[in-house]
Every structure is written in C-alpha cells, then in structure tokens.
Image 1 (cartoon, rainbow, N blue to C red):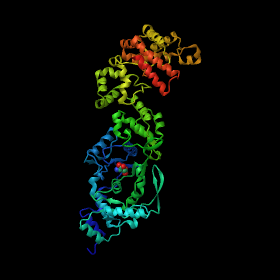
Image 2: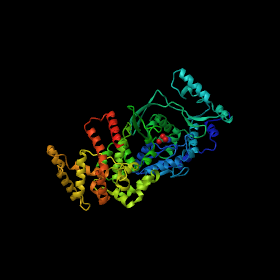
Image 3: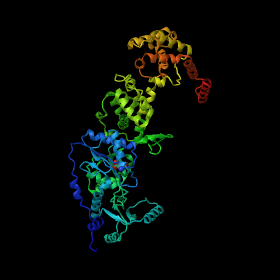
Length: 593
Ligand code: GLU
C-alpha cells in the first residue's frame, strides 16, 4: 500500500478494464471524402419524441447526405430512471415515419449496425470506464466519497459564504485525498463516484465559435463534474466526449439548451486529448403565450409530440418541408423556383440557420400540407387517407371504401393539372372536402345554403330553375358549359365578365361569378369547392338535377331564407358584435322550430 501510485488506484477502481489504446485502435479514424460531415441524433429513450428532436434529426440527416458523410443514431440511456420500455423502438419508428434513415446505429431495442458500435450507451460501460481509468492514472480524475449529507452541508456553507455553489476548488473535499486513503475507503466498500479534476478557472473567460450562434464567451468550467456515477455508468457530459471522439463525429448538432454546457464539454475534450467537434446549437421551436415566447412544451402543447402529426393525418413530407422552412429562410424562395423538386435537392446550410427560435405556425404548416397533397395523384391521396382512416376514423374508411372507383373520381377532380386543387390539408379533415360528393350523405343532410352576394330567395329560385330548364346539359364540354353560365348571367342582368362589371358596376346587378356561386352553393352547399364543371361531371346528370331542385324546393327555400337573412344581417353590419351574432342564432332557431 505504501508505494501506491495513481496507476494502482486506477487499477483498484477498474481492475478488468482495458487500456484506451485498445479502443483507439478498434475505432479508427473514418476515411471520408473531404468536407464530409459525421453527426448523430442522440436521444434518450424516454418514450416521447419531441418535434424539436425530429427537427435536429432532419437537419443532421440532410447535411450528412449533402456531404456524403455519416448520420448515426445513438441512444443515450445512461439516466436509467428516465427510460421506458420500447423507448428505442419508438424513436426508430418515429424517424422511419419521416423517412429519416440512419447510416449506422440502433436497429431495435438492443441491436445496432455499423462499425463504431454499440450505439447504446448502457452497452458501452467498459469503454467509458477505460477513459475514466486513463484520467485517474493521469491525475485528471479522482474518486469522490461525498455522502448526500456532506454535499448538503457544503451547499449550506457556500450559501452562507455567498460563493458560487458547486463542487470545485477548495470546496472539492476529496480532490486531494491521498491515494492510500482513497484506496482504504474503496477496500472498505464505501460508495464513490468519479469526478473530473477540473483544470479550469472561473475567473477566466473562454471563447467558442458555434457554427450557428457564432462566437460565444463563457467563464471556464471549474467544477469537478461527475464523470462516472455510482452505478458505474457515465454522465451525459462524459459519454458525449468519449462517444463523439470514438465515433468520429465532426459536428455536434443539438438543441441550444446544451449551449451552456459547452465549457464543460470542450474542457473534457481537452483533458482527454481529443480533437473537439464543431458545435452547432439549434434554436428551439417556440410558441407564443400571453405575449411571451416559450419552447413548445411536452406537457402543454400537443403539437410538441411527433406523434401528433400522424394522428392529425398531416403527411410527413409536409412536416419536413415546414421544418426546412424554419431551418433556412431561403427555403421558401427555393421552393417557389423549384415547385416540384424533392426537398433532397435543397442545400441546407448550417451557418444560415437562425440564431433565435422561430414561432410554430400551424396555419403555415397546413398551407404547406395543402400544397404537398395537391401534388399527389388521386390514388396516392386515396391510399394515404385510407391508411389514416384505418387507424383513426371508421366512418371515413367506410366512405372511402364503399365505391373505390367513384372515390378515385372524386379525389381526381382538379388534380394532375397545372393548378391542382388545394383544399385538402390533412386526412383528419378530408371528409369535409369530399363528403358532399356522395348523394347518400349529402341529400340526407340538413344543409344551410349560405348564399353570398345574391341572397334574394326568389332570385335564387329563378336562377337555379332557369339553369336546370334551359342551360344545363351534362354532355357539354367545359367551354360550352362556361359560356352557358355567362348566358345565364346575362339573362338575369349580370355581367358576363368580371371586368365588364367593374368597368360599369351601375349597369349590372353583379357578374357571372355571383351567378356561378349561386349554382355552386345549390349544388354542393359550399361556397368554395374545386372546379364546378368537373364536380358536375363526376356527380352525373341525375345527381346534379336532384341537388339543384332540392336547394330551391319549398323546404330548400325555407333554408335559403334563414341563410339569406343571416347574410343580410351580417352584410348590413347590424349585428356582427358578439351579442348580435347571438341574436341571429336565436332568430334562426326560432324560425327553424
Ligand atoms: N441525449 C441528449 C438529448 O437528448 C443529446 C444531446 C446531444 O445531442 O448531445 O438532448
């Protein structure tokens, strides 16, 4: 015992552990093309994949693909209290749904693929211990025997002395414990952890260059942070340094909640003699609440969970496209110029990422989703909507499957052309976009015809009846059909063209658009639909006539009356405040009764 040195102490603590040279050889430097980025997604298997995690995984996947680099999935499960069953599978499946495929990493709960594995930290225990052993041998780390009571006592004293709390400098009780005493305690079975003997001085400042945030300055780390816990597993900080060194990570892309840990991480790389990676700290996705911005919260915001998007039926491509919009502000312009290109062709630049967080914008996401869906063909829309319905909406499943041929025609309306329909934003609301096309549902529904500019009951009746009697012919081609709509307009004193109306508004009651709106609403109950000619073609002659007649028969007219009164009231602005709207509702109810 007398002549014990640090090597002996290290051996006593980690008797069976290999020398680090073994691992340095086992995991050689990667041979990669110039400029190739090696990075990772390194989540903890907590059973929850946050949209922010998906965001960083997407960025990591993209920049590695762009540089012929490597993207790997490492599971950080050293905090075993936070772990849940099947947590790894949940992560793998979430990434797969978004088509984010790692080049190396975990493939199920326990197994991984790739030459730098294992990729689950709990399976790398001996590796971390080898590097901890190396640090102890070199007097850069030491066993600490502090009990919770001792730590509490230290905290109190520090509070009284009004100094920065923590385990450092003179406060670090076991930092300079003689080797023999440490050995004695270990042999007596006392509990301990391994701490870094920090060479830092908090009075000194260190400057780092973050790839996204630019230059940042922090005080040096002087805390003797824990590197190996009492269960023998490493802390996040230590595992990060060892893993990213051995796995050849060139860029650490992660959320900016880790920015303040940079002094610790960079110090660990230095002490271990490793080349530090480049750090890229991503700003979070934010939400506005009571005028203040905060991070999307797992507890408060359903949209924080990656699962939410699948449940809502928002295509994963749309979510990815939206995230790229947040990532690089030039994406939007690129998309305008490359309407049909795959997002893989967009070059994402880390240094063009915004330093501060963007607000989550659901309206924008759904807008993007509409565009994404507008580019699908009818069959794809059908398949995706059905896959969603199979999981979440039995009624929609029935609707879609009852007559597949007809449904494909419905979905095919205004699709595959220059300006495809853009009304479908997600599968969970697609019913609203198509249900009116099915007679068995539409004809049995109480429809409130919300006519727009033309809302005089008699006028509507006349327009619709005249259309049925003298203009409508299902065999007309589109041009003829449209010309007839103009003829109808003219017959009732409306301009054939909008332009014509605008030039002389006093001469006309309105224009052809007002007339076609009357027909559209009578036909579908909706003011906004895809192309009406195509709708009529899909519905067929009988359905068109039945629908139009239904709108203006006695019952239909009654309903028109309510709607007309309401729109008149709103038009006159006599009742648009909250109370007014309430009154309208009462009136309508009374009349309906
Ligand atoms: N396990 C850490 C997390 O889930 C990873 C951070 C990092 O990428 O270094 O936030």
